[in-house]
Amino acid sequence: AQSVTQLDSQVPVFEEAPVELRCNYSSSVSVYLFWYVQYPNQGLQLLLKYLSGSTLVKSINGFEAEFNKSQTSFHLRKPSVHISDTAEYFCAVSEAPGAGSYQLTFGKGTKLSVIP
Amino acid sequence: DVKVTQSSRYLVKRTGEKVFLECVQDMDHENMFWYRQDPGLGLRLIYFSYDVKMKEKGDIPEGYSVSREKKERFSLILESASTNQTSMYLCASSPPPGASDTDTQYFGPGTRLTVL
Image (spheres, each protein chain N blue to C red):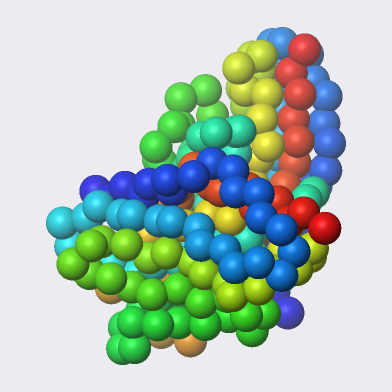
């Protein structure tokens, strides 16, 4: 079984400042790692994912995350945030390769508030 | 684009009522999932389904049942609603193994259920 810990429930940050949202996981097997984002009054959507290969993965809107196997972490970073990044961010893990379902285990979420 | 729709955005029911939450996806996905989302608890898996008429319990199945009579539709049923089932319910689907995005879950907008 896997578990995910998001260390911060809320992160306020000023516009154009950098941000890091922390995620640690626990698993006895190899994993796939994901960050999903939920904008207000919407469902979740995939932001980025690590399956294999390069440990640094990037999204189209400037976020990046680095898989660190020794520290069992997958922290999400952005060098300069925008008001539109205000949302709740969820880290998730699944077994790799999945048993056909790619069942996800989610963290409790981090609410990012960007302050003008 | 993948589209996952849920029958209602907001629903108010009384204790003891039988409640049906419907989810439909239009991408011929085999895997479908029901989660509930509560503040500070993140997403918790209720039930999932790999195929028509097939279902598996998730982490919190008590008080819920599901139905999947057609591939595109996955229903969540609360046999006798209780106040502790007041929550946001999210449906998701994912493609079968072999698809390029088989690891990705696509979410609907959610149904906010209030049980009085």
